[in-house]
Image (cartoon, rainbow, N blue to C red; front, top):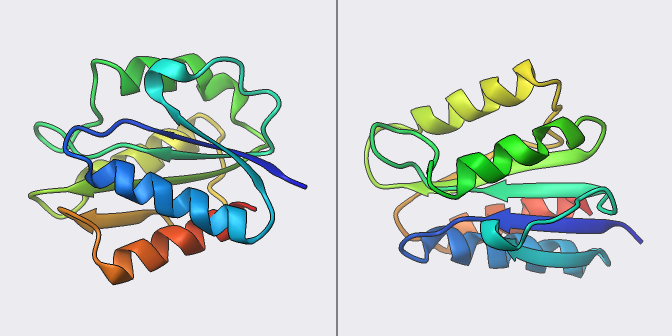
Length: 138
C-alpha cells in the first residue's frame, strides 16, 4: 500500500477543499493518506508520494509566511518521490503554478501528473480533477 502526504496551505478554504478531494481520490485507490497543514509537516521520508497544495498569493506567488518556508525545508527530500501540485487562484492565468512547476524541475523534482488549478472554489470538475490527481499518486 502506498503512503501519501497531502500537504497544503489554505487561506479561504478553497485549497483545503481541493486537498480533501486529493486525499479522497488516493484513499479510493487504497492508499494510506495523511492530510497535513504546513505547520504539521515533519519528516516526510516515510511517504511514497507527496501532493502539495498552495493558492496563488499577491502577484501570483506561493504563500511565503508558512508554505514557502515549509517547501524549502522538504524540497531536498522530494526527488525520487511521486509529487503533484494543486491550488486555487482568484486572478491572473495560473502563472504561479507554472513558476512552481519550473522551480520543481530546477530542484530535480519530477511531477507524477499534471497539476490541478481552479479559479476560486473548486466546482464539480475541479473536485474530480483533484480526485484524479490523488488517484495518480496512489
